Image (cartoon, rainbow over all chains, first blue to last red; front, side, top):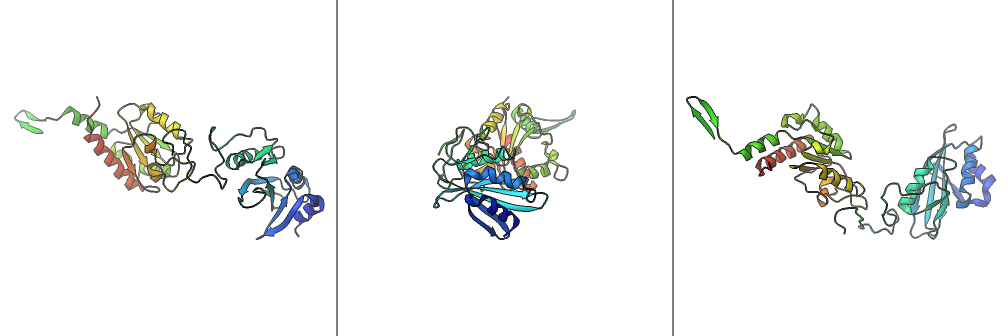
Length: 158
Length: 156
């Protein structure tokens, strides 16, 4: 087991559902309500220093329960290590604590996830749509968003 | 019609035709560039293909000074009201060129975000297909637009 996963297991064993390595990349499936704590831990621990939030996105698994997974990618610039944290999110009341307090860059990522998947981020300072427009109904990257549904601002409606 | 007299030559024409001739060789375009087609637009405009040979060498960056709206690249539903506003700001007579398949039909996009052809929003005179179109295709489209301008009854 890698250093990162070892440290995670040592400190957060009660909040981790799964640890693993997929094709050379470490991942950990963790509880949503602990994500801020865990992210702060791997950022500030002197042997880990995952100081760069590379990506924050989500995946919709319509046949799974919980339905969504929010995925965080971290890079340690000093050690060149990468780790992926995944947080399962229920469809009902889909909400995850925001990481904006740790990384300012999480702001727009979280707005995009809200826009595309309808997952809210608790404590986000300005959770608005970022790519789509005000008045757009639904969240188009959800698998149950009809593929041919159009919501034009002007022009013919289908 | 050309006529030769001992005093010299002159020719007669219709005013309409003469204005069409003037207009087709002084196209001031407004490039509405949103995506990768812009690179081919630039290639067409620059020295190698030299769009200035066809009298369309001076893009204006205000729609109020432009005759032809070049819509170059994918138009999303979010951007559509802006495109319509730009079109409305142009003075008559005005023409629209749909540059690339995204503007013609939506291209390979078929999703919640993309306008399926700008002709659902504004009238289009010339469609230039291609993803992106080669500069030769663009010039061909431009020449077709010139022919169209020449043939139209001219607004005075």
